[in-house]
Length: 228
Image 1 (cartoon, rainbow, N blue to C red):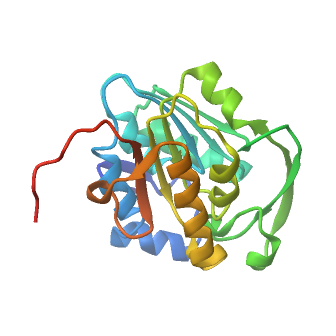
Image 2 (cartoon, rainbow, N blue to C red; image 1 turned 45 degrees about the horizontal axis):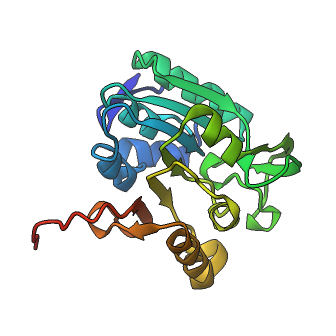
């Protein structure tokens, strides 16, 4: 059984997801806001780092942009295999999808809690019951950005964005698209993210943001035309 979501073919006969996530896929709600923004997020030649790539659906949407390359990561080893199946089904060959965890600063071990509804998997034990724990050694995100000449960062990392964006320098990056998770860190966490991004020269782009899905970009000084 194949299903088309956000112009991406999902081979439901080749992957397993929980009933909750399956229902979101079939109803069209799965990552709907992210997909709308991702369609116009990238420019020709962009080099993208995506953390928390999950099933690879947003990855596939972005990969259809001309002359882009995407390095995608997820900490969940099970979901990486499923995401690779989705990318292969769609003939995507400009994505390198790996299991891994990137953080700011020196490498260290992190516990990652894998949950039945994979979108709830995170580094937060207190987020709820989990099926297993995976120990991952992190890599420095700023070193990766420099080595791969990354200019766009995409994040859906279940609350870890607060610490990451507060500590990473993001040198060379001109756009950061993320889903925020205020149910995990409250409005104080949202404030920390905005302050950190402002300190690095990024501004909130209201036209390319929707609710918790936020785009920050470097201000190029261009005044946008009026829009209702």
